[in-house]
Image (cartoon, rainbow, N blue to C red; front, side, top):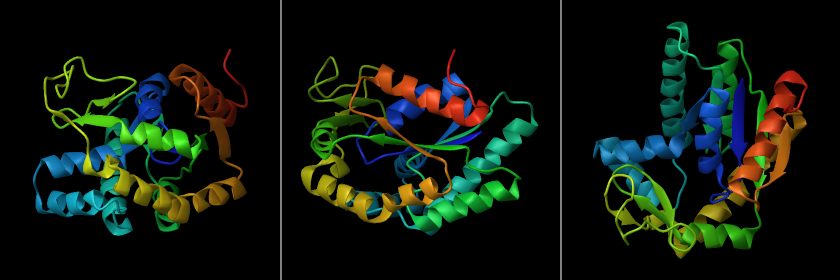
Length: 229
């Protein structure tokens, strides 16, 4: 079972992926998390990635595909060793036609394919409000919101006491760039997966629990032909 979560930045893909992965025994593949880990390592690749993301640009396909391929290879090794994982849950990937084709190729080589693609649909004004208020811990990556879920102590992470900041790519200018890039490069992928009969849209402007229930119902229907009991 291989599931892709889609939706513009701020739609809640990361939140839902963190919940759905353990629930469905899917290995979460989130390029954003992998990028931030590389940046934190201060490697040459990390420096390059930081410059790209700070501009609000998308990471080039060749870099992204290479990182994702390594992650899938690791998953295959774990499954071979008997790890209890049913497949992959992609969060933030693919973003372009080339990435979608690369993912199809990677999975096809394993005799598998994408099972379901779920678009989390959120109005643009809500996205801007969510993104501009987002704050992130520089140490553990915990996510807060300046209005709806701030840390107990301003600027201090509740989880690890690390520094909580507003990322450069969550500032207004970068937000506008990121949403424009989504419209130009990623939204057309919805047509790509719709043509394959794998796309379902869910309303993302609801509670986390309601969105999660809808996504689980979609995945179960696509996988087994039956909804939740």
